[in-house]
Image 1 (tube, rainbow, N blue to C red):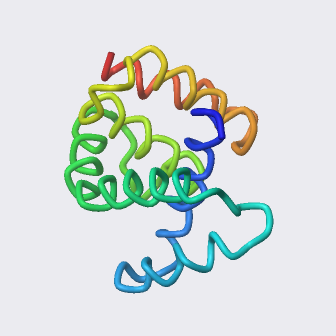
Image 2 (cartoon, one colour; image 1 turned 135 degrees about the horizontal axis):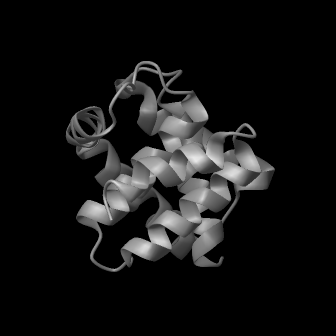
Amino acid sequence: MSRRELREQIFKLLFRIEFNPREEMEAQTELFFEEEENQADVADTAYITEKFNRILDRLEQIDRVLNERVKGWDTGRMGKVDLAILRLAVYEVLFDAEIPTGVAINEAVELAKKYGQDSSPAFINGVLAKFA
């Protein structure tokens, strides 16, 4: 899988946390990979799961930083797709030294174009500009 495809899978998992209790996420992750469209080889599954769990471990911190930097919005008001994309991108910008900031922002905008509403790419780009 390409980096973009891996990131997309992580985004899809992050989206699930809005609808499932945290203690069920391990089971949700297993169910995720059982779906035909989400099947991946062992290495990709390990990468996706590991990064997803690292984001989950920092979720409160990521949300706090988002709430501090985004004026007029908070994570409770954001669309769930936009929030999942932002959580992934903020994690990559602040905590993943392997991902350059520009790449994290660009990839987040691309996810917003694919999964978000018409206004999502501009919103995502505007929010992430505060982290660049």
